[in-house]
Image (cartoon, rainbow, N blue to C red; front, side, top):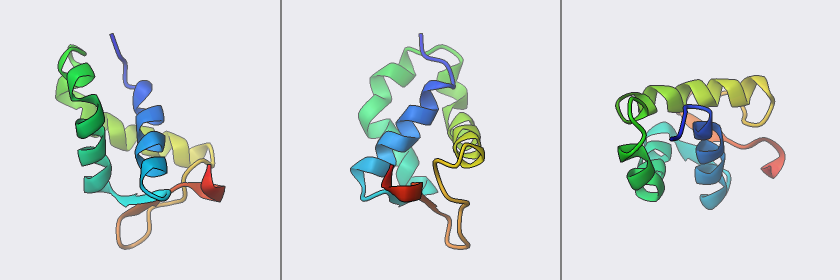
Length: 81
């Protein structure tokens, strides 16, 4: 069963699939498109994944893997990782 830790990889994957930057809502749509089945079978994560996606972005920012969200709400990978 997936835990919220997997959202870090899913956020990065969503950004990589889309030239390294997306708006928050687009990240959520990408994750749903590519991981709906896993989310539906993930117990409590199914009910909290959008919150956990934001938690993952914060963790990735602290690790220097994505830039701080700009005033337009764009999430962007640092150094094209």
